[in-house]
Amino acid sequence: MGAPLDTLISTHRLTLAPARRQDYADWARLRADSRAYIEPWEPSWPSDALSRRDWNRRLAAWTAAWKSGTAHIFLIRRQSDHALLGGLSFTQVRPWPADTASLGYWQGGAFEGQGYMREAVSAACEWAFRDLGLWRIEAGIVPENVRSRRVLEGTGFAEEGQAAAYLEIAGTRRDHVLFGLVRPRPDR
Image (cartoon, rainbow, N blue to C red; front, side, top):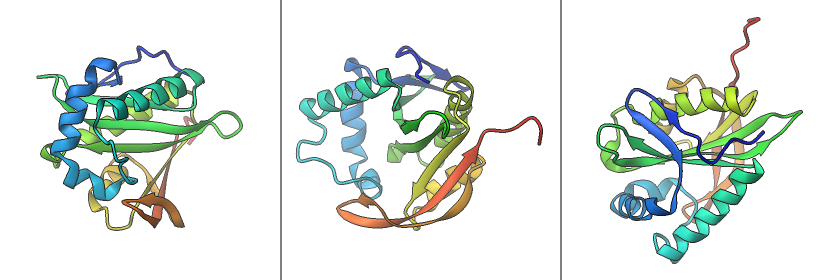
């Protein structure tokens, strides 16, 4: 159920690729520049967030998870200028009989409202259904994250319910709205 570490997903405007050591400077700069935009929607950042040590720790964990098939973490770049726009991940990848994963994503504040994340999520989900053999992709958002709701609904995700105290976000255990996307079935 894994995929090669040289996997690339391309769209008209974007390339999604696994993180590499040489991505550190772009990643750290984008996250630093967009910290106020990103941080309210994510788990608490570690005390050494954005350091080379933080990056190396993340990269090692992401690479190990990718190789084991339990997670696939991508960085999203614009094709026209190779600018780093954000990231997207499939985590908690579970094989048969579930054949499912959890979707997460983030982007820099300067790129909001340009359709990049919707484009990336759509292409990544198509890839996950086709190449990972998933049948279902799940996502959860805090209720007031209207932009993220638009991304999910705009890519075919359906709201499925609420989960109390689902994840720690910005230091507080938060309720989430849960969404699901099921692989299109030719018989329906």
